[in-house]
Image 1 (cartoon, helix red, strand yellow):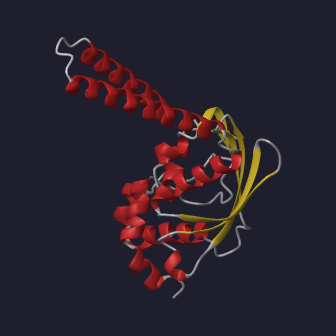
Image 2: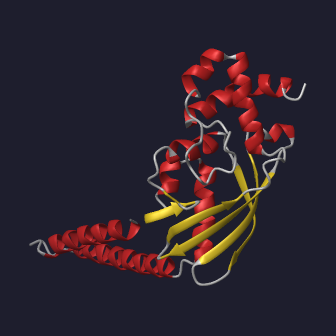
Image 3: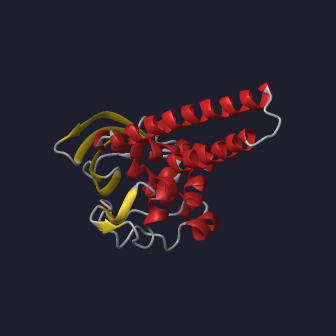
Length: 235
């Protein structure tokens, strides 16, 4: 995107320079303006060349890190923007109905994915080990190891696999599930509005088949009620 913008700007500067050159005054001011425009054009072209080189040198590891950074930003649309046409997550198409809402739910819990190491295994495959926490279970001291396995081609993600810990562990997914069930029992009105009918099925990537999922709005409700939930959790 930046390269296209640069070309437009360069074109604009060239027109401005030509306009100055055609001026009948021929004075020093016009000459200076034209020279400045040409210098700016050269600088912009050099910057464009640097951007092109950097993009060409972008490695699968760098793409993997950028994808995880985008996840941490909470921008679900930008996150899916990293995926190529026909890409998959846990073997399911990124176009699978409900996937945006389901992943947006976890992003909405303000997950923080801390990368321990990203290791390439060939020219396209990258494995990143991480520790992940969120704003709902993090205050309870919960951290969850999640491994990201990405296939990258031409700077885009062709496939993503999450390797989850055993579901029996008290991880952030279990806490999120427990929180939704707690909302069902203590705030039925909120539950009916934001969670009912939003089970994470039939997505095969879901390691917790009984897990309740929702939209980012549902996650916001959990965070809003977080202090109350944590005070009662495990009591």
